[in-house]
Image 1 (cartoon, one colour):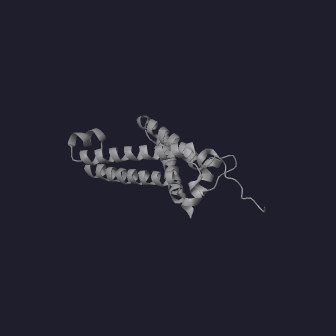
Image 2: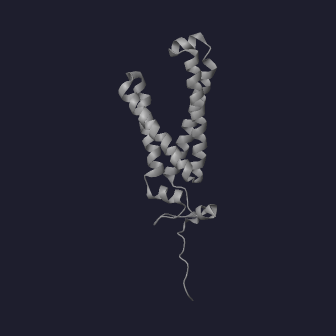
Image 3: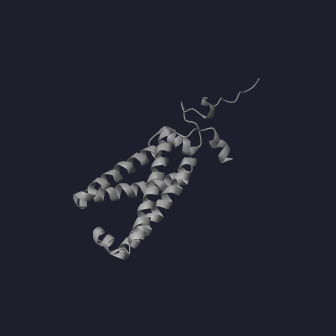
Length: 161
């Protein structure tokens, strides 16, 4: 029933962009997490990172889990899942908070990553929650002026005859 209702509503461009950003960020988190796990026992890597093997292991595992969750949420968002939209929103709010903390509290070498975290988080949040088209897509109905599949607005049922 939900699939039939959603079938006529086209995915807005900003929802597509938000989904793609979630996938790209997730893949990058998976890659960095794997690199941390692979380098955790390398003494030169530990010294360069300034972290212990156990800290590198914890960070690597956390990034792998976050990356996998991000990719899974992206799939749900692109399919129009309301639950995935809300979960992605929570993840992105956390991204904005941690990015803001990075900007304010950490040394200057980390500030650019904090800035990109804030910018990316706000962009994804806007794509998922900021437009009438996004709300219509996740609700499964066509908003006024929003095209449905085939480029035509749905016709109203005819009464009488």
